[in-house]
Image (cartoon, rainbow, N blue to C red; front, top):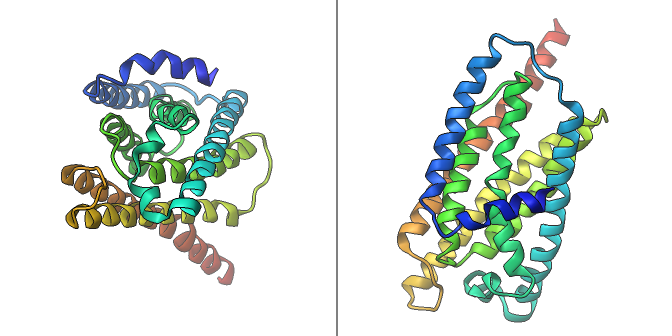
Length: 254
């Protein structure tokens, strides 16, 4: 099912401006959907949510294995600089498909929000902001084959492999330790730190005149994006796990 969705969106990649159209439609669907759902009872959608999460989990796991294996091989045989700057990630026999699939997947992943709206769950700013900005950045950066892309995509595949597996288990009714949810958020925060580090390395090597193809404008926008994610995920971690834990402890002591 997911591969069919990817094929449907294949023709959109050359037209990067359409990413703004997708983002606008996405925002409109959120506003319209929430307005409609105010007058309706929430949908359970447990089985569709399990199927959706399992599909994205399987896709992310395969993506993480394939891109992770490729990146590890480059890192071990040619070093850190080559793993960051080499554009072969976009053209390799294996990594080329999974890089392309990664970019395409950012459109179907917008469907995550549909479940939140239809189930009348709390929709936080971090959720929809993250979806929109990742879509815009990925679609704009892919064609330029910017340095660091291999690291960005592999890290995202790894985090999504764990995250969507967790969602699938929860939707299936399994009781998962709160610590596992905390671990996922911490991995997301770590991903943002690593993203900033990779951008710093790319910029440093570019300034030294070394072969590390990117654009200053891309690095700036990417760094701002990662920094904003870092702040928002840290805020989420504090509110979801620290504040609530202290609140529960205070109530028990009363």
